[in-house]
Image 1 (cartoon, rainbow, N blue to C red):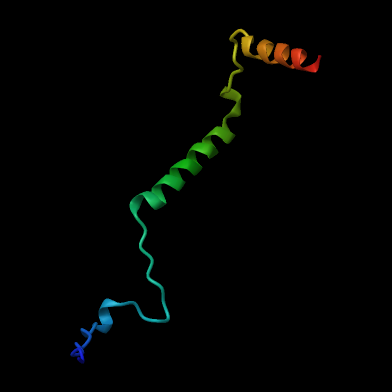
Image 2 (image 1 turned 120 degrees about the vertical axis):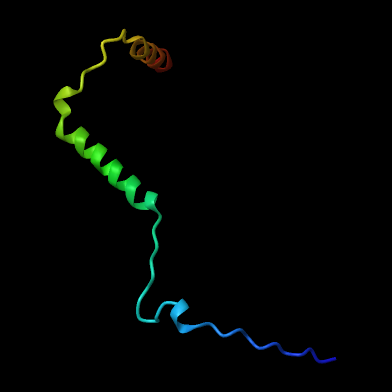
Length: 73
């Protein structure tokens, strides 16, 4: 039994982009997040003099050194 063919709906030319150009839409966060990350990294690079070394007890370093010493036996 043949099935009746339904005609395809006509798509207006204005609703789809022309073949010679691409249409790109970005969300606000797709532009903002990389810009904020770049600014934060640039700020860290520009002012490295404010960084301070840790003054805590080097317990973790001693633990790793002791573990390596035991494994070397």
